Length: 443
Image (cartoon, rainbow, N blue to C red; front, side, top):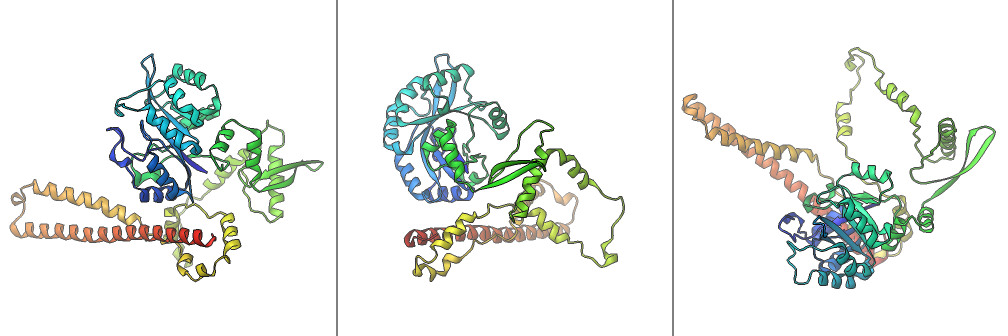
């Protein structure tokens, strides 16, 4: 479950850049494209309740929206850094009033506050705190300790790192870490880095309980996943009942404790029961890698045996991009509600599938070539060609370059129309389906 707890929708400060300004339509489309399920709007030193409510209603079918703000902190020791405060969406009215009070009469470009001032004003809204950590402008260790002391609940305080590698390191040492998109350009939003929750949550309260490592809520969320009760057998005389989840299951243990045998017995048991699964045993990785490298130093000519080398098929495989699969639960929901409305069944457009752009790599190639062509024309204009060519050669050269430019433009325009029309068509289809679902109680 992807979440983004550091997201901007407005250019507030001059350094933000206009790419953070986003329309409701683009916001909805990009959130859907990125498959993010929880987003917190955290603009600098301000909170726009009207925009928040408008966006929240627009994405409610696919995503939870939480209210937040990113604040410039300046402590008494003159250190400066950014602190994100995210509130329970049930308290959006109180949160909006509190943020307005905190920044009343302030210059949003330059204003700063202390941790205590932020806590006194916003903590009543049921909030979590995320401080820039190993990410400029970053919190100092002294201020980090002050933040923990003032909040007095470590489960409500998170550190935001600059990248996934740093996040992984600190997570392994028991830190509460988080990462967000900190989006700079909404046209590229789906390419951002997002945090990923292994256990899907339904609301802000569950998130806070999960952060607290609350055993009851963790068990509740785990129990929502399908489980299998199997018998592990590291030895024929040993039978160990084990429950595994429809997810990634990891077996830990010292060397020689039978982990590999347990894993192999579970794997074989699942296959014999007709279930699909994969296993990975660390000690086997070297053997697998060596098997991949095995080859013979000889030329191969498939034409001698009249065989096809499948070059085109292999090229397609290498260029193939992964997409998010449809969950089985979605098929079940569709089947259980498909007879709810006969009117919808007559709307054949709701059975449409998304269009796919034909060879999107061509657009990248044509776009790159266009820049090179323009640079070539500019370079040639700076050269006195009369020193090297006669009039006929110069005329032929200019005509050839002009023809290259015109043909490149035609191909580029064709692909732009193809890409944009496909995006608009797919977006329209999705909206029509969502409206039809809502009005017919179907999925």
